[in-house]
Length: 337
Ligand SMILES: [Zn+2]
Ligand SMILES: [Zn+2]
Image (cartoon, rainbow, N blue to C red; front, top):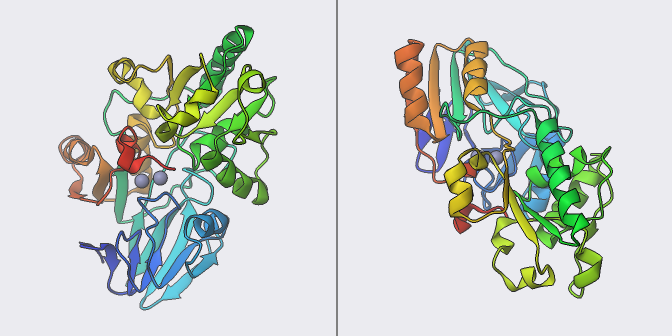
């Protein structure tokens, strides 16, 4: 019912693509990260909650929206969007045709996130799952504990008049961290320009976050000495960092679970905080869908597909994408900026 093509996933019965990476007639979009929302298609359809960020990312696009859970008839199919818990407005897309149900997960997580609706398990026959962190080594701590660690790190640095620069994905992760700092005594918080614009979009969508000031061109020295700064990884090693002498630098990502990666990249700290499901959550979610067939994409897809067929006796396959999401975050090409 849904096939992998050169432009991405295609549903022939409905005449639409899902998260295509090449321009198409009709694109259904799970969420606004650049590896899922490529420019140039004639029309876009996303969940209502995700429209503001998608429009910000693709300002020239014709974007239509639908509320979570509402059924649409597209061609010979019935389509609905369901929360994926990944970033604001992120969705799984459910497609039904002649009694058969497929769900395309997009990216998803099961941990609490104050900036988006929680993941909703959807029963289906075939589940297309992501596998960004599909290895048993990837297990996440409760986010509240990670936020405690961030606050302690900031406090120690502030005591020494050193800025704390926390690199993170600019769409989703930065706002999630900021929102989680709401009831903590922390501050001031400053934002790199690439984070500030998207944070404004989240605020306009009604997401509650503490105040945070955009770093202006001439801002440096004393004003930032006790600050927590949220910035994209691409800012690292650029002249922009010169305004933050003696800064302690950290990275917030699921990748920080692997100590070697943190050392190799010479971060002072690594905070294990991901917007993707960890190994246990992937397996639990796949079981909850009741799907007999699971197609795996994004990241460690071969490893997950093999495990599911050998240990869970599921019918499996893998789907290649043009991009590889958060796992590629350490390379400049996929850094969200
Ligand atoms: Zn994503
Ligand atoms: Zn992705």
